[in-house]
Length: 329
Image (tube, rainbow, N blue to C red; front, side):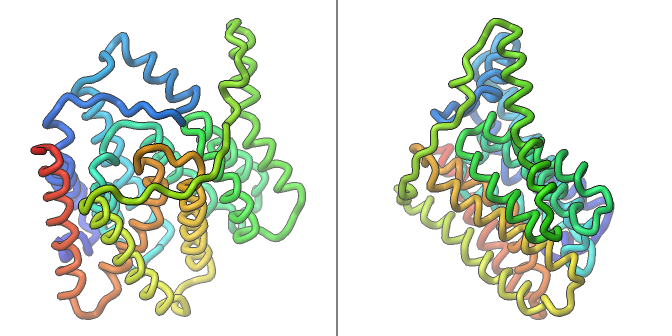
């Protein structure tokens, strides 16, 4: 499979779909309900309440929706990563890695607010990439921060991605106070417009929008499957990080900054894990995008092809076992 996905073949989009169906098929084996969490915010609850009268509170529609979101995210991440030349040659390793990484913990396959936030994060990352050497940076920063402002309205702990915006401006732009002011206005704009709508519809409850932030230590793994999934998240990431660092001098400055932005997203994702951690590992999913990119580097760079081949089949076997056995149990 590594040899297939290392190539930029148009037919690989269909192969990626078949690959996704194999990994994600357990989603369709039962009538799943969308995940409801204590930290879900106004927009996500509004979305579920809108869908419930049409599709019910659970059913195969939500399984299909989760699958489509995951496949679209894999395809979108792959297209953007190739567009910005994250690796020397275009390939489908980013999409493959995203599907593998997002399957390491079965609960990540549910339709949830974190799944929607993760979809938005791909676009936010691409928006931040375009800040570098942009002659119209103000508009680009405002548009990106507008989307960042939507995140906490879906999932409260994602308020932490404000830190990502600040670090992103430092990495991609010269220091200009005006750009930070524009970023702040863009971030607050969704809150402002939603409050206006709530006031005009006689549903004035602004306290529902304001995030309640508490810091806790992350939840320890409760099973060997969870421990194994986290281990297979970390080990290929470290391998990929080593190869990226080893090839950093061969990269253009812009590509180096893109890898730095991925590290920033992962760093903020780790901070989010400490914010209102809840009773599951849904918030860990917000680090999947950068981890998947470093996994792709671990599959791409090694000169001895046996290593990435063995690594892939270990990940694949674990994912299949974890997902199918969790359904059987």
